[in-house]
Length: 251
Image 1 (tube, rainbow, N blue to C red):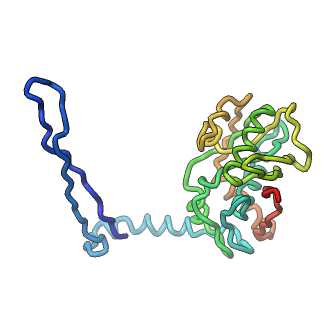
Image 2: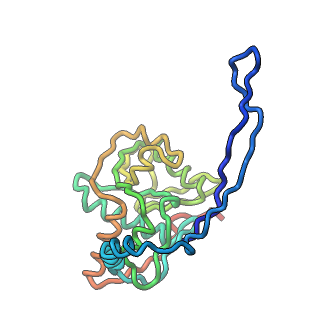
Image 3: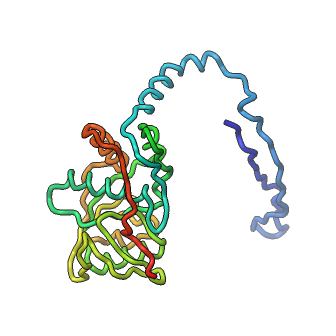
């Protein structure tokens, strides 16, 4: 890979006032250094052959085919095939690991999905490219007022990945919200599965830090996807995702 040109900023000539100890920047100078393209650098043969067995072993692992998809899965708004897939998988796998009670819905963020999944063979490396972080799934118990904040957050973002949740967006506010096909009830408490990043206030979701309860299920989001893909292959199924209008703009 080529190494991009980088800027090094050098601060020089700090002047001191004659009768004062206060430091001031008298002048700012910059100088550009251009680094050579790494492609032109000779390969160290000793290092190359030293790491080759490890590289080959890693490539073999990362190229393992986990499943086959009927279509490319990509991000979009207010909903996309990739977001629907990851949110549905997260809810499904979290419920398998959480025996206490039913999980009501799932919310994730588009920023956490770093790459699409291809049509055809989905390899382990594709999942790592999609989800390079070590984020874990957590279960939050929330009251009705917190749920409303979540729904309006989704609307303000013009849609985020969700599962078992349906809503309309009107003037960046959530309306006609349903959970599992049932009208949202602000007097009830709900259990939501999300990433630990969001549960800890990431993406401006600070209000999630004051949830009624937070439970860890020891399941990484990436592992949830990997396990699901393998499960589908064992069952002789391919990956097929539809847009089901779970989030729509009010017309």
